Image (cartoon, rainbow, N blue to C red; front, side):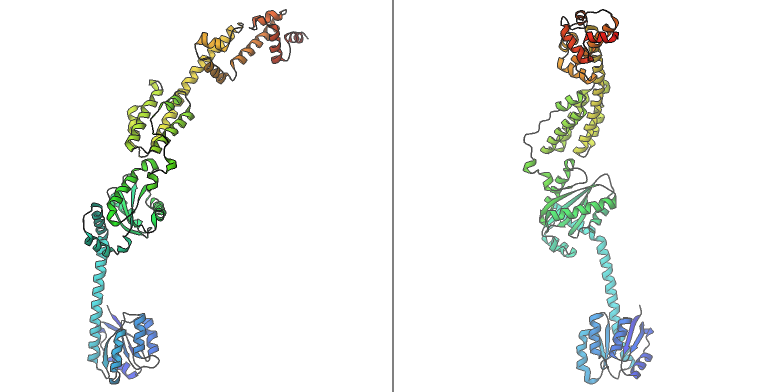
Length: 519
C-alpha cells in the first residue's frame, strides 16, 4: 500500500526543498499535494484524504496547530508531522493531542524527515495488521457464532453451566441487557424439510425481529429466544408478521407456539411449555400461532357437562339418508370434544370408534374398508382434518341410504296406489286400514311417505280417484242412479255427501254434469 502525503509550509523554498530531497517512493509514499497556507492545506486535505500531513506551525490563514485540531476532529486517522522553530517547541508539544506523531525543529534535514516518516509508516503498518487481524477474528467469530449460541441454548435447556458461563456468553454476544425477561418461540414446519432449510428459516427470523436474542434448531423445531419487555401481545404481533413473511419466502406452512415470559434461568421450562402448546395444533389448526389463551378456555367457553361419546344420533341420521342432519350431529359431537380438549390419542380413539360405527349404517356390500379408514384417521394431524374426513364418509353413506330408502319407498307407495285402484269402492278404505291391515306399517310414517312420493295426502288421492271413476261411470253408463253410483265408488249409502264432493272437484253436481254431457 502506498501512503499519501501532503506538505504545507508558507515558505516556498522549504516546500520545494522537502519535495525534491525526500525519496518518496522508497518509503512507499506519494506526495499528493502541497499548500502554502493553513486554509489551502485544509481544503486539499478534505479533497485528497492523505494518510500523513507534514505542516509548518506558523502559517497564514490557519496555523499548523489549528489545522491539526480541525483535521483530527474530521479525519482522526490522519497522522501529522509538525515543523517548528525553537520558540514554538512547548507550543508544538500541545499539538500531540491532535494526532501529531512527531515534530521537527527547523532547519531539518532529509534524514530527520525520512526517519519521522518511517516511524509513522511503521505505526500505520502495525495498525493495518491489527485491523486485518481483527477483521479475520470478526469473520471467524461470525462463522462460529451460531454454534456458540446453540451451545448457550443447549446449556440453558439442560440446566448445565454456571452463571460465569452465561456471563461470558452474554458479554460475547452483547445480550446481557436483553436477557432479563425472555419468551421462547417454537416454530414447527409442515412436511419433512432438510435441517439446512429449517436453519435458514431460523436465521432469516433475525431480519424481522429486532428483539430477537438467540436462535437455534433443535430436532424438527426452530427455537427463538426473544426479549419479553413489551409483553406477549407485542411478541405475538411481531411473530404473526414473521410467520407470514417466512411462509411466503420459504414456501412452507408453519405453526408457532409462544411460551409466555420467564427469566433466562427458566428457559428449559419455557421450552417444555412451548412443546405442550405446539401439540395443541391438533385442535387449533395448522398455520396458527398458539399461546396460553388457546390452551386454557375462558370460563364462558368451558363445557357445561362432561363429554360422553354418543354416536347414535349421527348414525340414525345417516340411516335415514338425512345428510344435513348427519352433518349437524357431527358438528355438535366435535364441538363437545373440542370444548373438553381431550387428549390427542383419546380424540383419535373416539373418531375411530365413530368411523367403525357409521360404516355399519349401510348394508355390507356398501360398507367402507375399516382398516384403510382407520389408517387415514391415525395419520391426520388435526381434529379438523378428522372431522372433514368423517363428514365426507357420513355424506357418502347417507346418500347410499337415501337412494336405498327411496327405492324401497317407491315400492311401498306403488302398493298403496294399487290398493286404492283395486279397493276404492270399499267405503271403509282408509290410510289406517291400509297401513295396519294390508302393509303392516305405521300409519303416520306411511302417510308422510305417501305425501312425499305423490305430493298429495292419502285421503285426497283416494277422493280424487273416486271422483275420476264417477266421471267415467256417468260418461259411459247412460242411465245410472246417484245412489248406485255413490255406492260403486266408495261413498256407501250417502249420495248427498258424494254429490257435494263431486261438485267441489268438478263444479257440477252429478245430475248437472250428466245433463251437460247431453247438450
